[in-house]
Length: 68
Image (cartoon, rainbow, N blue to C red; front, top):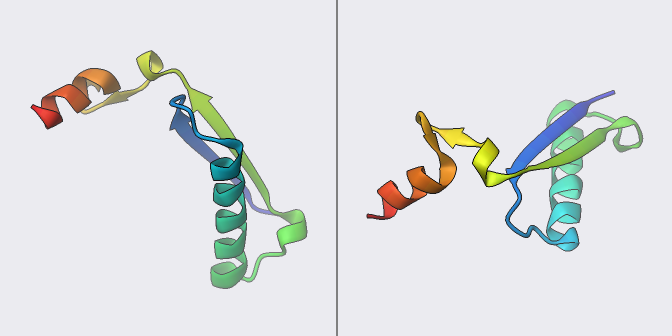
């Protein structure tokens, strides 16, 4: 009974994109580990950008530095 938790920043992922993630992860678990899709759970958590950090920086600042 696989459980997959995907965390993304809240930046407007559409319901269709989320559905594609759920289907893709479910299919990958079926293909690679022969897991039953009927017992595979996928949860997507959206996190506010100010609650996310990369390399010791808030994600917005990290992105600005990488772009600049």
